[in-house]
Image (cartoon, rainbow, N blue to C red; front, side, top):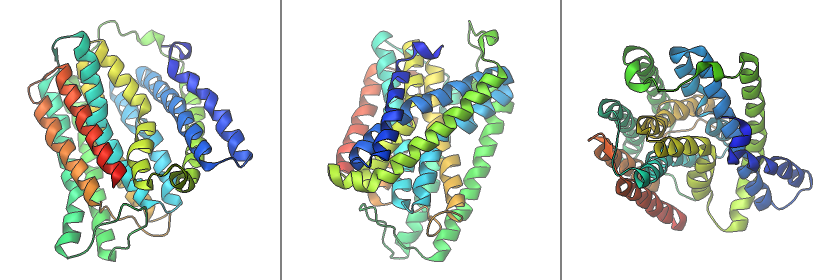
Length: 363
């Protein structure tokens, strides 16, 4: 698909606007809004360049390229927040990405696809494998908080203030991160090698000759990566003041605004695939990306926190975040277990996501 055919690229006009506002020392809320809008087209461009590069590399290497760069925008945003010491914003964005993909993206895909098709089907084995990975991810992310509570310790607050934990809890988080990365690598072997036919089914009409050249793909990916980094720096640099100006907590901004912006490209692709009755692809994107956030992005951020920021980041989430993670892990396996979807199931997922948003806002 050419760049001119995707309306999302019109948002690229916000990139120079955000830069101009930053140079003019404009209100942080304006810088935050324009940089958030500017991230969307750069993330979409990075996603398209990744897809084109994957098309040239073949299904094995192509799949590895997709999963490696698929979550790059939210990882870049989180790295800048981590360097600024905004650990609670980082953890909120992790939860927001997991829940957003599992509830909002999957729900929107089921709703949009089900509105055109009375009943859509997808491979139940692949969907259960993905939802199983999601469940394992959520349990792993919840357990450090259980350890903290059993020691009669307190969970982090929602005010954005960094919580100080015992050093051994940081070590526990490091070990959990290493296990999650090992699980992620095992998942790659499962989905890209031993059971590749489940996750990379041949699509009729696919034309490998339409792929971009290798030079164009790599060049576009590099340019998009730099643009995402620049917009992310502007976004993170304005979070604290902007959240105060518009009257919302950094907690809500990290969990919903930053998470949705970072995943905007995947949202678009999943919903578009569902409208074309390609629910296997839509479910793979939504549930698979949700699991990948917990299995890859979160552990990488824990490892980087030992090098960036004021102190290592412990994987201990507050009560609202724990409730959101558990609700997503419980409802998604139930809805995908039969290998079928309807628009009403999508509506239910979006309704739950909306309720979580209301609770997070008032928290």
